[in-house]
Length: 618
Figure (tube, rainbow, N blue to C red):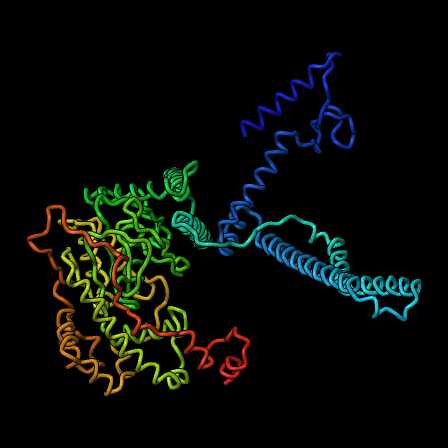
C-alpha cells in the first residue's frame, strides 16, 4: 500500500510541474457535468489511481485467500463479509462453466493436431508412391484430382473436428459468464497443519458469532414479552425505580460491549486471539479460587480456539491398534487443554476437526497419535512416554473390518455382504489377531513410562480417564481445580459420549461383535500367548463372562495402569524412535481389499478387461 501510494504521488507531482504552471486536471478533476462538475466532488466522483489500484489489489488478495479454503469455509467467509450465498453460488457456477469451456477448447486443439498429423502422413505417402501406380492418369488431370482430393480431405477434417468446438466457443463468447476471469480454483495437494488450524479456528469464530447473535435475539424477544406483560399491571414508577433502570441499562450496554470485544477482538491474529482466550481462562480460574464473582461467563467449549504448543522434551504418544478410540481421546484432550494433538499420518480426520495431521515435532504438539508398529507413519520421530489405549480384540477387529470394507469410520457392512464375506472374514481374523498381539507386546516391552487405558473405561467414565491421561502426559504432580473445572465443562456436562467425539461412531456397544465369531475361530484364537496378553491388558475375566455383561465389567484400578521404566534407565529417560524398524503386519498379514471388493461386486471396477467386467456384473 505504501509503495503504490508513494509511486503514484511522485508521478502526480511530476505531471503537475509543467512549463505553463497550470494544474493538470487528471482523473476525477474533469469538467464533465455528469461526473460531478469541475470540482470532482460530485456524487459520481471517479476513483483516483491509488484508490483504484488498492481496490483491485484488495479484491485480488481476497480471492487468492479463498484458494486455501474448502467449500464450507468459503460459504462462511462470504456470509461474514456480507456478500451472501447467492453471490457465492453464482461465482461457483461461473467457474464451473469456465472449466468446461477450457476442456472443450483443449479437446478441439488436440483433435485439430491429430487431423493435421494425419494429413501430413497422407501427403507423405502420396509423394512416395511409385510412378507405375499412377501410370494411367493424365498429368494435368492427376494433379487437379490430387489437389481437389486434398482440399476435400482438409475441408472434411476441419468441418468434423473444429466446427463444433468453434460454434460452442462462439456461443460462449456471446455469454458474458464465460468471459469472466477464473475465481475460486479447486484445492490440490496436502495441506499443512497451520492452514488446517487456521481454517478450524475461523470456522469456530463464525459459529461463535452466529451463536451469540441468536442468543441476543432470544433475550430481546423475552425482554419484549416481559415488558408487554408488565404494562397492564404497571403503575406509576417512582424516580428511584427510573434511576435504577437507567443504571441497569448502562451496565447492560457496558457488558454487551465488553462481550463483543471479548468474542472478536480487533487488530489481532487468530493465533493471538487463541492465546488471549487461554490467559483469560487462567484469570477466571484464579478469581473463582479466590471466591470472587466472575465478570463474565466463559465461552462455550465447542467455540473455543485451539493452539499449537511446544514441548520441552520428546513428545508423548497415543499408541493404539486401529479402531480402538484414539480419535475420541484426541478430541477429549483437545477440548480440555485447548492444545492440538498431532498425528504421524495424513488421514481424513481433518474434516472431523482433528487438524494436527503430520504434526509430530516438539515445537508444535505435545501429544501425538500413532498406529506404529501396526503400520508405518511418516516421518520418524522420538517419544519419551506413551499412553497405550487398548480395546478388546473382538470389537476392535470387527470395527477394523468394517472400516476396510466400507472405507468410512461410521458405516457398517450390510448383512448380505456379511454373508458373502464369511470366508474372507475368518481368514482376516486369523491374520489380524497376530498383528493385534504383536502390536501390544511391542509397547508393553518398551522401557519408557507407559499408561494403559482401556477403551471400555473411556466411554463409560471419560472424566476419570481423562484426569489420568492429562496428569500423565503433562507430568502434573497434583491435579488442581483448573483442569477439574475444565473437565467438568468439557466432559461431565455433556449428555452423551457420542457428542464428544469427532464423528458419530457405529452403533455397536461393548461386546456385540462377539457373536460374529464362530466357535472354531474362538478355539484357534485362545492360545497361551493370547490368554496371557489378555490378563496383562485387564481382560482376564472377559472370556469367562457372557458378552451381554461385558458392559458391566469393573474398571481398572484408578482407571489406568501405569508402568514405570526400569531403574537402569538414564537420568533423562529412555527414548523410543517410531516409524523406523520392523512392522507387526508382515507380508502374510496383508489383505488385498481392492481385489476382494471387486470380486464381490461391492465397488465399481475401473478395469475394462472382460474378466473384470464379468466379476463386477456378478
